[in-house]
Image (cartoon, rainbow, N blue to C red; front, side, top):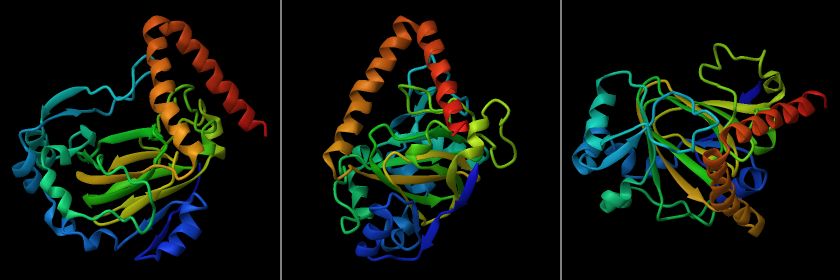
Length: 289
């Protein structure tokens, strides 16, 4: 992996953000954006336990899904409050993602403001909360709707590995899926370059998010996250401004995913073998460039 640091600013004007990052598809860390929100000081474990503790949520373990498994399938369900109490107690390899906490407690939407000055197209019905215990992992993927993301860390530290969408074949993207065949868990200590040699040529970024950091991830960016400490974050999603970007997201969400799920059910072995061969064929092309 050929990694560099993400640019960091305390604040940035809308004009500079659009010129230097939005229009160029480059990630950015903004330090002060969330500090203007009541949520910056207000949101903590006990607040969420008291507010939405009785809501049932899906939880996900660190086991990387195989090529036969439909994506986004929860490993278990429990009350949100019970899960948060486990997170507070110590290391826990369970995480929550895409939890729309605001449907259960709409009043807390007042705790932050949408940064419409930075970009348009925010999907304001779906701000999402992501929670992970110390040691939990979000495996390498890109978001299926191809939205731009503002991902704000509110508690704990998290290591993030990022790659532009165009690096997908060096990362061993599984055809018809948003996931990589390779396992990047613990990549900063060791990685299986023997079986995934094209990853050596992948150019990306690495950053550690802390309380109050807002990461801008351009549409389609691959990301892998490891919880150094138990923590939670919120993602605000914005659709791409051009029609092609919107249609690409819709196709992946409603077309690509549906076809893949259907084939996994009807011809799993044939579908797996076909995709597996294609992954390595495309990676070999990248290696030979």
